[in-house]
Image (cartoon, rainbow, N blue to C red):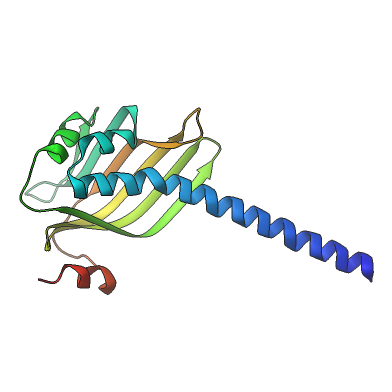
Length: 166
């Protein structure tokens, strides 16, 4: 009986340790993503660049005026960093929810819904898909960001939309 209880206690302890490590690693993966959104709010292109690897690809998936699928690719974040760092009258607020985080070794993927606001005004929503690399120093960095963008059909959680009521 004591042996069975002891094995059960060890199994519970190991499961808690594994869950704790998994949770900590997921928080580490989210750190550069949260840094990206903070940089956008502050208009800080230097902070934004620190969230990314040196080589970056970006993509926007959407529809053209006729409703046909389109893909816009960028092989650098230079234009994005410049637009973030250029003074603009409204704060850029990108809010995310329902993050799905997958990790395998030095590769992580995050899929999340988002809503983007210029100041308090809704601009667009969609999905962000991040790919991240765990660097030599153990920090995660974004090396690819894809998103969708739409003006309609958004299901934004009330706790987020309430923050942006005029």
